Length: 136
Image (cartoon, rainbow, N blue to C red; front, side, top):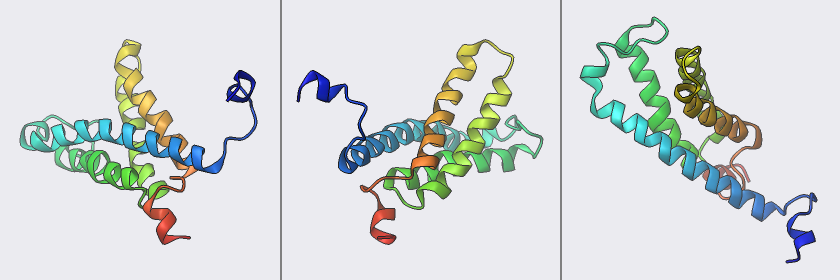
């Protein structure tokens, strides 16, 4: 491929775009899983103090774990991808609001995740997904 072809602003072929979406889904959600699994393994201690929006520690933590573990797995698989991205977006909006006004370094990871999950919501999972098999 020439430099001109590499730098072209023409549309990327469908298979390349789908592969890019697969990489995005797997990488971002694998990283998100580490946060959710850590919360899940420390549930009893965290539920005593974890209440970012006043719904109670157990409920708040359960909802975040649902998003960060189960929805992340669904997005990795490309299973009900757009629907599964919504709880992840909500969780990251809450995380941004919790860290709003603090040093930017505390808010930056949540903003990066929020951006990625929003892109996934907009674009969908691409061809390399369970959704593609279900909704041909």
